[in-house]
Length: 245
Ligand code: ARG
Image (spheres, rainbow, N blue to C red):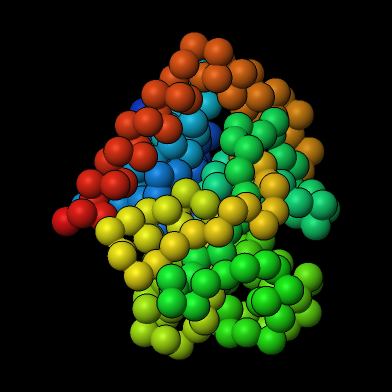
């Protein structure tokens, strides 16, 4: 028996099965956020997925990607369940206390989604209103920290917009790109200008300077050689089409 166990152990080590974790770069995301991450059938696809795949390639490793609720994305890299958190994550001072951020790869911001028959005019108008947001996001923080009130928390930007259409909230706040996707083809809805200015970056567990450097080199390369711009174009088009189905 002992001999068999030993043979099995050696075989596992030789074929690398015992080291699965170190062979694979695991990305964690929340895949209701087109064009950065969304589902194509069962497959998680999008700009962030391509960026992280490029990081894995540069490291010479395999790649895998999982989706969880947005407020579990950063905890997954802190606990070591995943190596790379990429989910249109905005760099914030609060988050910097818990994770390290790569160089940013997008400049963007949040907007208000409103019904045309109840137009949004300015931030002051939001005070005391029922506002839908995706839980755990900077849109939620805008409502709790700036407006000093409680939002209606949804699992995804699309779920928040469904509540707006149903009249359960008066406004939705979300990042501009998923917001555009949500209002596409909806004659009754419109978007405001930016109400914040934000940047997306990849988050990793603190204290990994080499991994951070590889990620930053990858971001510099995909910006310089046009891959990032190409992914933005391709996934924006694909996400638009999904919406039309
Ligand atoms: N940029 C916002 C934030 O970091 C929203 C990100 C939501 N991302 C997602 N994949 N659902 O809070």
